[in-house]
Length: 293
Image 1 (tube, rainbow, N blue to C red):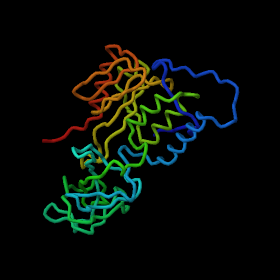
Image 2 (cartoon, helix red, strand yellow):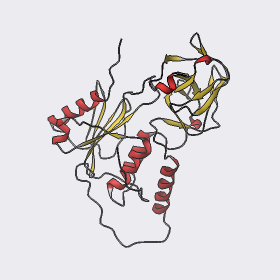
Image 3 (cartoon, rainbow, N blue to C red):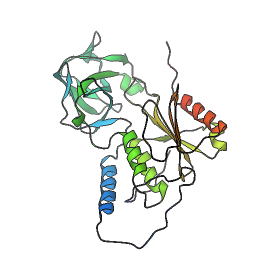
Image 4 (cartoon, rainbow, N blue to C red):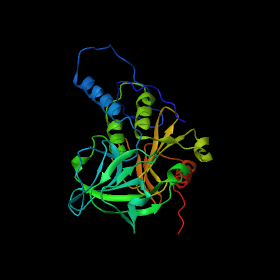
């Protein structure tokens, strides 16, 4: 279980990945400045995005369609998995739990209530939908009444709440000027998006004094444990050593190198040793669940 310090009113940038030193404070200026307003904006954004989710979050008024017809609704700030579509919009996927009687022949009935893993209502269908990858909930209590599966729809880019993309937010965090301790700001980022510390850690990383923080998908598959979306390797609480993404190539500041591997996209903020490179690979495969054929 992670424990985090309260998030201060700061942003950050990593100047040197291995030894991102704290800046020496200067005289305190209480007068509002452009920088202070930016810092207040970042803090407010993190407070608004307090739910630990690993996907894009939709506004309640979002129009979710299938074949250009209203398809289903979702509660405000509900997480979805989003992929850019050819028409400029986004194809979204959502893992849901529904009452068993609502599904027949692989189709989810119109007017069905959509639930999350805790049995809380999060939306409703507006037309009959394909119920993809149907399965029995792993929770015995939920399994008595519900089945779980994936539903799909289309939205416009305006559907998403600002700063709900963990990759983009990381780039912005590292690009902004940091005026305080690295970890106080960065731990807030980890908490906001629901990163978990990887344990047990591969020996190659542990021996190098590194830690690994994993963000998993939630709505790509109908599985309780899904593959990683992003893994961030840090040197204790000092700075970022490497960022591994599932697919997206990031434009990070102070980047020392980028590699495309079978298991994902490596972004080096410090040149890795052979041992560390092996540790990155082991960590990646530890976060890719085995799937039966």
